[in-house]
Image (cartoon, rainbow, N blue to C red):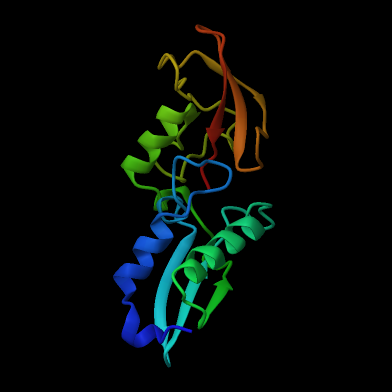
Amino acid sequence: MVDVQKQINIEEIWEILEAVPDPEIPVISIVELGVVRDVKIINEQLKVTITPTYTGCPAMDMISVMIKAALEDRKIENYTLETVLSPPWTTDWMSDETKNKLKSYGIAPPAENTQDKNSLLGKPLQIACPQCESKNTVMQSQFGSTPCKSLYKCNDCLEPFDYFKCH
């Protein structure tokens, strides 16, 4: 077992976690997604805090397994993994770079912020197609390939695509 305090620092832990891909969107890491909330060393024990994108997110079990594997590959065994739900995860935690990676992967990134009230007013969101950039799109289903995405279709290029919902 590695003595966490002496063998590794917080920046190195963040680098390890940055290499863990999101199991549903492998072009971004769990750090880029904002699932990793905090990394601390307390009383010579590493503590990694994570938050799901949705309560009950089915990917969280796999994310936990992948974090444990990444740490144990580096011989780090003295750690705890804590899941917290408050404050809830938000797409506001994604950087512009992460949103660009989503778009390049074919997923429309979340809108500018989570304060969009259009859905409450019955107005459809104007979501740009990640393929052709057209805003002539329509939601086909509130849920896409995962619960955190909606399924859209572009009326210009006719391609279906996922939209990463704001929340």
